[in-house]
Amino acid sequence: MSEKHLDVASMVLDRQLLDANYVECGKVEDVELSGGVGRLEVTGLVTGPGAAAERLPSLARGLARRLLGARVTRVPWSEVLILASQIKLKSRGDDLGLTGAETRVANWLRKIPGAE
Image (tube, rainbow, N blue to C red; front, side):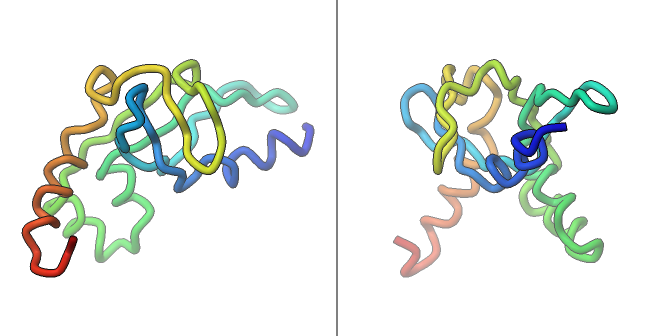
């Protein structure tokens, strides 16, 4: 297995996703792989509040799911246009099912005094 395959997680995890219109539409929480020994291939990116909750300590998972929701969204790797400090997608976030919870949370956070 080559080094570039081993480094894919550090290249995409926690990166901001930007849709075709440069709208932030989530962060990468996990990487979906397929294949077997000696040949792994990235097939998708996993995002959403449910995926983010899985990375939290067990005591915080339930609270995070109740506050943010449990939705997990898979973005096919074929949707990735540019892989840089942010990940630019080919399609709009709405078309990929990405912007619902993030928009609700952003609107909720704006109501907190001093948040802007």
